[in-house]
Length: 229
Image 1 (tube, rainbow, N blue to C red):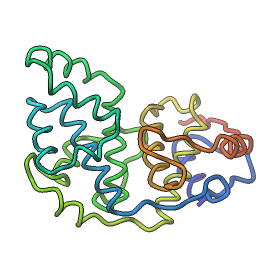
Image 2: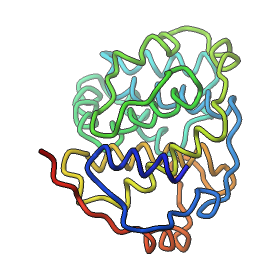
Image 3: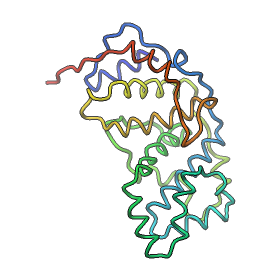
């Protein structure tokens, strides 16, 4: 796992000076969430982004109500859904305002969750943002029943998810030395990976990592940027 992280960082021009890079199990207590939990979170983010970007967000809310899914949303997500209760002109104004909100970065989390479910074969590197057109066909369509999708979701092997979490944790600690990588992409993908892999220590919209362990990991990591031709 540490070798994989080293190689991937070197592909972005970063070589680790530290001889020892802790394995992810030395940093976090890893227990993966169930496929059902991941499926429901995928739907919640799909609906959240729908409320923010769909031409009529009320249709998204009606869909979630029909499927008895609103209780699966976090308080922050329910707050976003409140715009559907406003008069139309005010609703559309607030929707446009939300399209510049940090919540829109949840698209990167959605992408990670689809990858973890095995729906997307490989994750693009962090120097590229996800393209919504690459995931839309893997998600339930507006008005579709949700249970078939929930039942269809599987989970990648623990090793694959742990390796990706290890890589994105290292990327967070390299922030500021990799000009071609958007730190918000890294942060959002790390957020989702941590939620998936550390089920005992995380809740969506309330995710907190283990600061003491991360400091230990960071202490072992120094970086130098290699000049490219």
